[in-house]
Length: 296
Image (cartoon, rainbow, N blue to C red; front, side):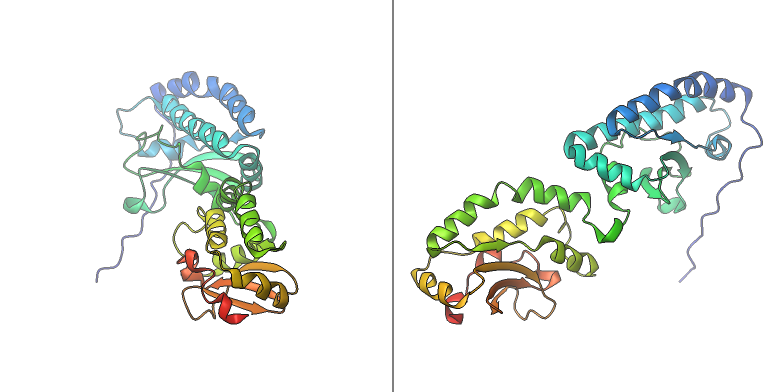
């Protein structure tokens, strides 16, 4: 098998051509203050631009002179993506953005993946938000960044293992507010007030550490927890049995690698655990109550 070709970046230009420098002055440098103001109005961050124009323009065809329009186009595409990001995630998104882009710097660089790189992509490297272009696609798809901000921000590990924006939003959007009527219905069925603990922090940590967690589990995190509660169906025998044996009156969801079946319900230390292995999290959730009566 041939060895993969390692991408070698081009050396920076000694100087941009005169026409390109003029375009850079008129169509980028003159617009920087306005672009920065737009960004600050969206996320409250004073972002600076640190772009090595000589390095980037080394990838432009020799007859291409619209350097300023190109750099402005990339940043305007980023701003459109940022607008979509803030519209969707609000103050929570602003918090995560400021935390991830800690250097408060935006740059444009060639994608080090070479031919394997996307036409346009983004990431955050050492606190710097980077717009990456493929080496042979400079200036392509500049406006197509509307869905690129979230993955860049979520790629940055949070302090103390905090939850990603995707997971937090899923909880806020799919669980908070929707869980209460489901829990009220179950408590009515059980004839007593039980606590239903989604155990989000512990389960997030377990799934994040697992190599085989289901795809999109973070996006479905809130709804998955809610669906486990929906799995408890009406059974009159549960009323007296649960109240006797579940001293804590607590149900808790648990990611447990030692779970034998796709989904299990066990009672430990007076707590009802609905548990699954990481790779089976959210599978067969409507069977959450199966076998519970046999444990009583």
